[in-house]
Image (cartoon, rainbow, N blue to C red):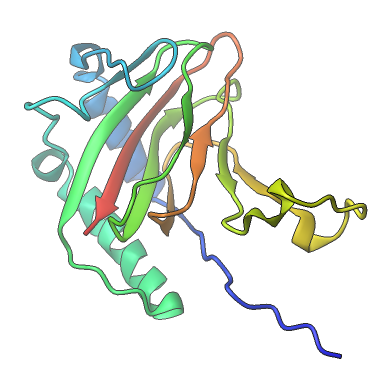
Length: 189
């Protein structure tokens, strides 16, 4: 008998240089209060996702867009998943511990990403869910068995980029009182 491990799912982490992440945080903080609230989230979250006048990340931070593209290029080298350079970006600000973004995915966009503009210790993790849903139907007794792992958590860290396949379910979990958490979410098409 043989066991083969098929269908791996790649998630890339990349830390942006401190000088750039500080500048993005400083300049973007001037625009955060203008973000509209939206019904698509739970709790105290503001976003320009549905807005016709999004914050212009492309002109404000071309170096950050280059970081997104370079991370995507590395992701491509590892996975051979090719996308165009066309990026759709939006800003999300989680204003207190009630702000969450329930389990969702970005459809068939291609490659999606999250960049933490700012985050403190109180910010809840970003959870990704195993695309293999077998544990929705059967039990697994061995808690150390890697096939049993249904979630992977990423702690929000200022200046970090996470890239993942757009189909992958994920959610922003609850934070603690005093949270600071602002992200730029994006899709490569």
